[in-house]
Length: 141
Image 1 (cartoon, one colour):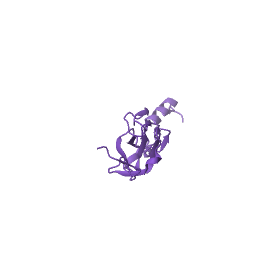
Image 2: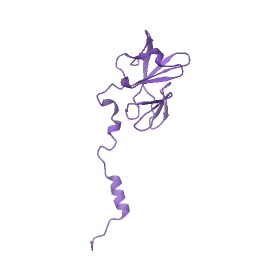
Image 3: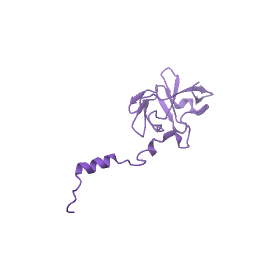
Image 4: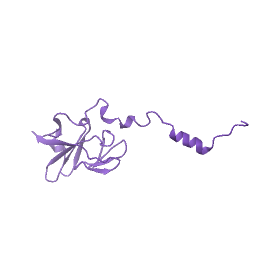
């Protein structure tokens, strides 16, 4: 069009970068409020047979959002498997490393500690014990 200057490529790109995109990527981060299992058990829950967790290993109980590990001495530890970064339910256990599907945070299932950002806070610890051959986890006392 004569008499009207065209926008430069830089102006167009700058405008696009500053334009908000409603809802982009937020669904994956909405995590624990989707009406499923609570982020952390509010009462003791039976997870499975005590034999499911080998010494030096870990087991992810996705339906209860809990991971349980067993030390070489046979002691058990349990943590919420809800990522502390954005509240996503962790659905992958690679050996003893939990991998969050939303942003790639990684946690040690034996200690709850962050192994890879963006998460900066460790997983929430839970109480855990073996009762009558079953693993029972609950809220931290």
